[in-house]
Image 1: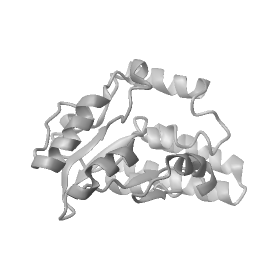
Image 2: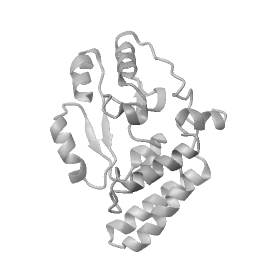
Image 3: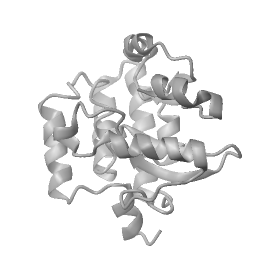
Length: 204
């Protein structure tokens, strides 16, 4: 989808930069090679992008203008309707909004998009640190110790899918298996907190 949009809008200055949050380059390689992108496509094994941009879900889209200013903060967006029945968010309005932004400079408003992203709270910052410790331990083969820190990271930041679901493949769990549906049910039971809801709760 991003490659097609780049081919459509690239001559007008639009450049998508995609970042896969995976444990290794080999995990994302088949998907990137299949997409055959000519736009920047990176693999972030350390979750640096998620941490610096406050991402708690995948896929998350951030709009950044030519001056490097975030003009539309984090929101979960989908380029196709393959999983529409699951997430209920159509791709058409989002793709049309991107086209309008590139062609006219219009930045679409959407109640699911926060006006400003709140800074992480102390527990969320600690969760990122716990994830980093867990990942380091896992890389050294200390899987039992890593499990403790992965669990702690999820407890500290229960709304962060990049931590909770993102750690599943690392831990040998199926990110579309029973653990995923347990995560979804937990998130659903807490009112499906998303970027906009969390920002509103924190007065941002």
